Image 1 (cartoon, each protein chain N blue to C red):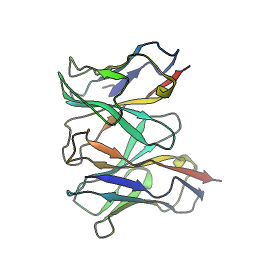
Image 2 (cartoon, one colour):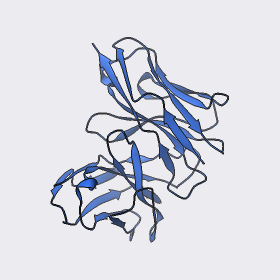
Image 3 (cartoon, rainbow over the protein chains, first blue to last red):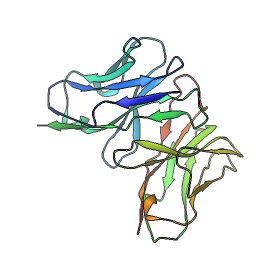
Image 4 (cartoon, each protein chain N blue to C red):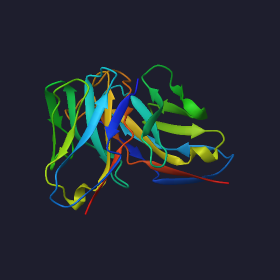
Amino acid sequence: AQSVTQLDSHVSVSEGTPVLLRCNYSSSYSPSLFWYVQHPNKGLQLLLKYTSAATLVKGINGFEAEFKKSETSFHLTKPSAHMSDAAEYFCVVMNYGGSQGNLIFGKGTKLSVKP
Amino acid sequence: NAGVTQTPKFQVLKTGQSMTLQCAQDMNHEYMSWYRQDPGMGLRLIHYSVGAGITDQGEVPNGYNVSRSTTEDFPLRLLSAAPSQTSVYFCASSREARGVGETQYFGPGTRLLVL
């Protein structure tokens, strides 16, 4: 069975400082992993995805994530936060084994950026 | 190319009323799904469809009904609205259900308030 755990429900950073949003996954298969972003009152937008190619994945808006099989982690990082990064971020794993749809979502991490 | 569209954007219902949330995509995607989003819960799958004429239940199907008569449309029906169905509803589509790294495209959401 697949699952994802987002380790922080809320992260607060100052503008210009690094961002780290943590995600651990569990998967019986070689996983496909995603990060989605949701700005206030908006839909979800794909930031980046891992599909067993390079372990360091670069996404939009300067975000990147590193797949670490030994740690079963897929943490999202950005070197320097911008005010526009304030949003909710979801770590997602593709559900290959089950019958209930194709994606399993973490509960989300709300990122606040202070000026 | 409009992507995934949802109507209405916002709806207020009284307990016991019924309504249909509309979802359409113009990308010829086979897989479509409905999620509800509640604070601190991430996105939970309500129903999904792997093609026209084929639907199945997700994690939280009670009180909802779906059909898929065409590839493009996937309406969600609330049979008798209850306050517990107050939520934000997202429709999503992808080319196929479980392709490696298959990207899911989300609609802008429908905010539903049940009084």
